[in-house]
Structures are given as structure tokens and as C-alpha cells.
Amino acid sequence: MPMMPIEPNHSPGRILLGMSGGVDSSVSAFILKKQGYEVIGLSLLTHDAGVAGLSDAKAICSQLGIEWLMVDVRKEFQQIVISDFIDSYLLGRTPNPCIICNPAIKFAALYREAQKMDCSHVATGHYAKIEKVTGSGRFALAKTEAGLKDQTYFMYRLSQEQLSRLIFPLSGMDKEQVRLIAAQAGLRIQDGSRIAEKPDSQDNCFIPSGDYANFIQNDPKVRNNESLLDLTRPGTVVDQNGRPIGTHRGLIHYTVGQRKGFQVKTTERLFVVGKIPSTNSLVVGPFDQVLRSEIKVIKPVYSGLAAIGPGESLEARIRNSAREVPCKVYPMADDCLKAIFEQPVAAPAPGQSCVFYRDGLIMAGGFIDDY
RNA sequence: UGGGGUGUCGCCAAGCGGUAAGGCACGGGACUUUGACUCCCGCAUCCGUAGGUUCAAAUCCUGCCACCCCAG
Image (cartoon, rainbow, N blue to C red):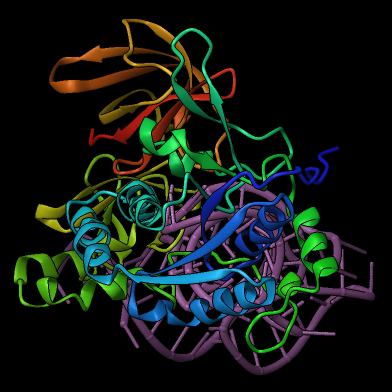
């Protein structure tokens, strides 16, 4: 059972902690302080709707008696994360903004500020671990133990440099323990309520309504472009043979493998198999149509391994909530990878990430390409 | 208005005398730092309509209505 680390005799140094205003980062602050760190809390303003969480982070910091900083990264967040999000959908892919945000915004800002604040380390409230790979000496994110929350998938694109000075105070804990610590510490957010009871954040952070399709439709870039607007308009659902069997609400509403959200005249369960923008039609088929035994992975990054040799045996995670599946990975031309699965996987969605693990450590990862 | 066919939840659709399957859609919940998937729970007292037969009908019979097809 994971224990609270014992207080060291001397201060381990200054550390900059990313704080969202949620339970996890707040408890992380509490733990680091207990451990003797000189903690500074950093909150990022990523988008206009994110202002609310900031006051909670600030409240926690003042309660713990630690310094609090806020940095406005709205501009870069818009330029990097949101625009990629929109562009991806318009290309028919399914982006994962968190994966982009982590290395480019969140951790980038953390390290930038750490430098300024003369902090030797940075920390976040993620549920993950970092290990040094024996042999290569490289850093790799390590999956947390089975049964515990694991957030390594979202951080696979962090660089060696970023991993080298990163600390996760919540390693080895589960959510229940964290809430318990929050309760015992009596941490309270701005409105006076206990942070232990604050619900988990979820869904896309910059689209509080959850209606991402609406968000895309209202983007000026889309609004003023007739051909892009077509992707938001209702169209026909067709089967494998192109036969119309129903209607859909607009191509951007769907992702490969999706089962719901379209009207179709059939008696069987159908899944989205593909999209045809030129005819504004959504191709659907039975479950087995969505199975793939091979994918192309683009823009790879390397963690535990510096490179991948032909036929490397690894375990691939095709989406955050999926279990890893054994596969063989091959380097391809144009800095791409090909993964061949032992057993076919269900609906690898272009735009989503495929992360390769070995012995629970992240070796590499990249984006699933169109097929 | 001659012949044939069909009418069951918003949509597909099973049922063929024994007291309304299932899928989609929809609503609610779990899961979830993306989109999805998955998992729970709910969702026709009623089977176009009016009668009849029967202990018992959505299921059999009759009339009517609606839609479809063929013919003229």
C-alpha cells in the first residue's frame, strides 16, 4: 500500500507544480509541501472558459501558504491546440487535444516558468510514474499498477528533457486515497466547499458544453467556407455497397467505430466504417468491418527506445481506455511506423494516438494515420 | 375501385390462438483530461379501425379505412 512519503530533514528544493484547481493537483501540492519542497503553484489560463478553475487553485495555494502564479497561454493554446483540433475534424480525423496540449502548452509553460522561478523540478497531479530504462538510460513513463488510474497515454509525447525533471506526487495512489487526503487536509476551494468533493473534470476542457460539433461550426474559419460547412450538414448513411440506408447529422459528428448517433433502417448494430466527404455520406457496417490488423503510425516520438528496429515486439494502446495488444512494429519510409497486431483491433481512429509499451513503459507513440 | 400485397413504439422489425423479441433513435446513470467504445436502467396495457368467433386473439372470421404493386 502506497504510503505518504516521509518528511526529509532538508528541503529537497524548489519545485513548480502545475495546478488546475482540481483535487489531484491540490493534493499534489499538499504532499510536496509535506515532503519539504518549496512549492510554487502554476495555473494556466488556456481559454476564456477556464477562468473559473483558477480561483480554486489560488485558494488552495493560499491555504497551504505557497506561492501561486498564473500564466496566460490563451494565444498559443488557440494557435496550437484549438486550431489543430478543428483542422483535424475538417480532415475527417478524430483529434485528441490533450495529447497536443501536454507537450506543447502545459509542460512547455511549466518548464519555461520553472526556469524563470529557479525551480529544479516540476510536478503535476497526474497518475503516472517515470522510470529510467535500464540499458538505454532513457526516461519513460510507466503505467501505474493495474486497477489504478493511469494517465500515461496522454503524456506520451513529452520529451526526454521534459521527463527528466518531472515528479508525479500521486504515483501509486488511487483516486479514493487522494480524495481522502484532501478531506483530511481540510482543503477548501474558493466557494468554501471541500475540494475532496469536487467532481472530476472531464470532457474537452475548452468546450464546456460538450458540443464539439457546434464549436467547430461556429469557428469563423468554417463559417465563411461553404465547402467546409458541408461537413456540418446532414447527409446520407450508406452501407458497404453504397446503398443508402439512412441519414446522418453531418460528418463532423462521427468517428470511426462509432455506433450511435445516426438514423438507419436496419435491424442490426452498425458502426461507422468511414466517411466520404465528396458525397457527404457516412459509411457504416457491422462490427467486423471495423476490425483492423494493421495501422500506419505517423509523427512518432520515442521515449524508452531511441528508435524502433524492424519487427520490434511491443504492446500497442490504440485509445486511452483500451487495453494494450501485442504487435510487431516496423519502421517505414517518411519517418512512419507500421504496427501489425497479433489480433485485430476494433476501430483504430485516424487522428487518435497509438502508444507503444513494453513492460509497462512507454517506448514510443504516434498518430494513427488515415486508411 | 378488376387482381394481388401490406398495415405491430419516431424508424427498422419479430411474433402466426395463450396473454407484445430485438436493433436504431430517445431519456437517465456508470465509465472517461479527447472523440468514441463498453456497461447498467427506462422506453407500445397495446398491435390501422369497427365488430365477431373463443376460456383466451396482434395472431382466426367479416366490414371499413390507408398505403403499395399489377392490370385496365
